[in-house]
Amino acid sequence: MGARKRISAEKIKEAKKDKAFALLNNCPTSPRKMRLVADLVRGMNVQKALDTLKFCPKEAARRVEKLVLSAISNWGAKNEGARVDDAALYIKEIFVDSAGMLKRLRPAPQGRGHRIRKRSNHVTIVLGSKIAVVENTVKE
Image (cartoon, rainbow, N blue to C red):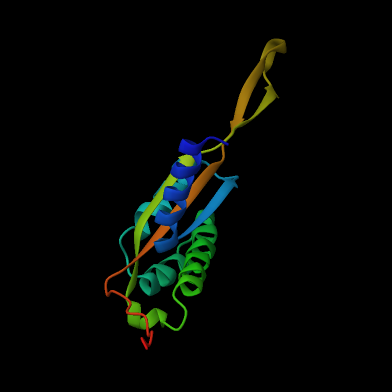
């Protein structure tokens, strides 16, 4: 691997150390349906978002709820000793990108076939803290 590529990869890795995020790849729901749920919780407090998703009737809400819980868990792993309640976590970014499509044929009249596109998506959630978390380190 080239030196430039390695340096670039290390910069990306350093930037990701501070961020608490979670990814959901190849989710078999159309991106349009998933964006409706993502727009519902964008910018919300984490606890309020979980409550909203719990009572949302859409099927995509279950997957986003699970993803938010995963992001909270990832935040906890990066900030050991800090409590979620004290950090005032909120959903800083949530975005939905389209993923691969499964293409199928459905029989149509007069010997033709209509193409069915079964869409899927990738969801990314980034959590932010309204209060900066201070690490409890003792300097000697």
